[in-house]
Image (tube, rainbow, N blue to C red; front, side, top):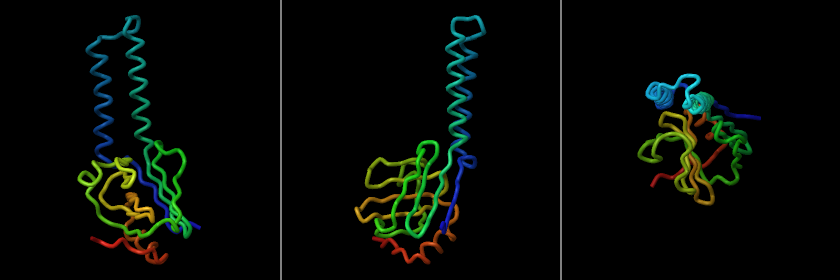
Length: 165
């Protein structure tokens, strides 16, 4: 039985919309500067460029972070980059807490961040996330827009909080 579930999308992230505008502007600029028209030798290349750009825009529009918490595990996936949800058993978690974080300072921004296998982040936007500290010492942060609800679930499950150093 799921105690908590959340689905965050990229639709509210201004960086995503800026990226889409840049992708589209690049495509229009390439077509305009090349003056590629049907019948020109550059036309197939421009058509491929526009198809790739349309694919990138559609990929970004599908972006979402799904999180599910049960008494046994937490499952999450950052679609379309993670096709299968990752599952973490609570028995492998040393501590957990919902905390504020600094996305740029701590992780270099939003998205799938795993510069160090010891410290990974799965975020959409905002600055609040579920911080998991694994028994192995690894740290995983999953963004959330439902801070209070997730805090209640952790409290009711008696998950130890992360000690602050």
